[in-house]
Length: 328
Image (tube, rainbow, N blue to C red):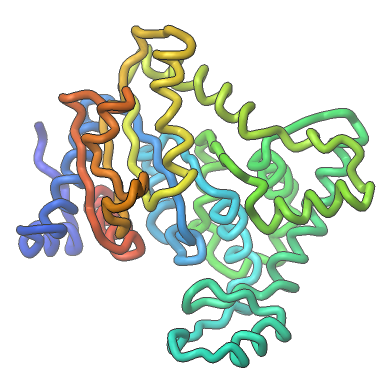
């Protein structure tokens, strides 16, 4: 194997991160680098509020440098990258969020500032601005009898340049724009559990959209993923880099046992690499906190699969791993 090409950040963590979760971070980063060097392809899954945490500052460059080949994310992360793109200057940070009283929270609500930990997303400048553009493409597809996946509607709006005049960050820091540029596929399980998902449901209830299935479903995402995984792994192993827990990771990893056990495609390879960054612990049946070996029993990973878990805050760990891989 070649030696990593490291910049100041990479050199710092290589020298100082020697034990415990710090060492696990280095092991995971090196495993990722070696996996790509051996012609592997990588899927990243994004849970939590990583887009509001502005993961795009490093994730977008990972995409552009061909280090990510498939993305699964929650509906919140899909939309919040665009919220940040078009309304960044209207966001407010609340550094003392732990001290907020119920009355303080009500004050934020009255100002239409939706809080995510220490960051408030402005409803009017972000959510309602996007609702108007999305409603147009939803209704247009509905009138034509066409159906698209949730992320494809977002891409239609981006391609049409509807938000360009509202960009408030450097577009190179938007991972959604990077994925569109590099034609990286996106899977969004449980999209209905998102702000835009709620807005779509409201549009159906109002009668603005006649066919509730104009936006394609999670089952259709899984059938697409099954065919994609089968096709990709004929030529290269596919790895999984999981940020956080929940449906963003639980949904795609299940494609392998489904292919093996339900479709009897037993020649399809298992996942070729696995890493999870999470602060969830193994207790009371927590799947998000399950150690990678548990996934062997479900037919997702093999004995020889490189497996890593970094039990720490993904907002700290993921950018460091990406910086290591990018030579920063």
